Length: 273
Length: 186
Image (cartoon, rainbow over all chains, first blue to last red; front, side, top):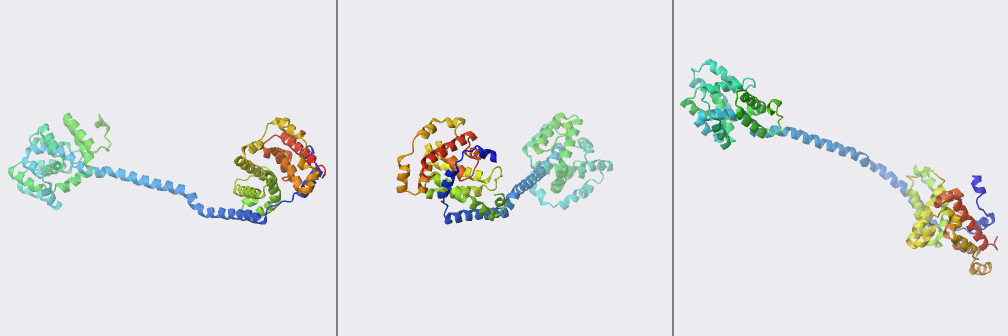
């Protein structure tokens, strides 16, 4: 400290004279203003500390809110295919309808009348089986055993009942069934369930059975709701069965319809080819 | 200042009382206007108060506060007269060879500053004020920083953002001129 002062230009006499006559000072009011400002600044500093809770947590809260919203949206998005599958789930039964439709014109006509179908309560679902027992009591036990799995639509057995159906019912031209599908895309599932119901009811197409089809279409909504739960997998199995049966074009068309109905459903590798 | 930053209001009061006179005179001698000096004085202390959170004791408080005061003066002069602000601006290392300073050094004191005229019209204090006012701004600045702020040459150099030799040269010129102006009082 003494080193810098030693070579510093100094004039003690001049400094003394200057300090003797330099006595100007700020006013008391100015002193008060400055000191008050200093105290106020400290007081203001404490207020933000109390109010800083929001500034400390707002980032975390914003992140948490964003996370909750994102999760909610993701969950909703995951559930969305289930909702969307409601109309298309009845479509997997379309092939059966198309196979069955030409064989039973009355059922085809009954298809587009969903009002009559929905008017019948679901409890009537049991009625066809009883009716079928009355109508075709002589139906072979083997046949009814073979068709019971078709009604159940187990994945493994879905192919064999169709073969039985083809044997029982005359083979329907694919073009005709396609036209039927194009003309009435929505009533068709009802019709198909009617056809499926029919298959469970009896294996023999008779005039009496045709008239009973009109009555038996009533359980269709309840049954279609059962189909809805497993329809994509069942539909895919049916497409596989079609491929195995050599109906490549039909399988391809079914696959296109499946993809239109279930755009979000992951397609198995064997069906991508 | 650290105590005040921690929330001790009394620490600021102590600090203020220690530097209030010297800082006020520094501003008053520079601008020569009491009202303006008070305004600038208050602004400087408000800056000190607001800067407490970021204050780090890198230098003496006097160096820091006089540097703030000097910057405030420069801002004021920039608003009032750019030419005056330019005279505050730091010069190069060859400042001692500034021909303007040499010319000023060779000039005799003004007639109205002669002891006789001044003794008749003004008090000694006024003569000192006038002598200071006659100094070039940079020299007056260095002189006031040394006398009022008690800053060393290094601190003056840091505060004025010049070299140490430049500050030393300016102080030497300022002392010489003041001695010349106030020689009858010494």
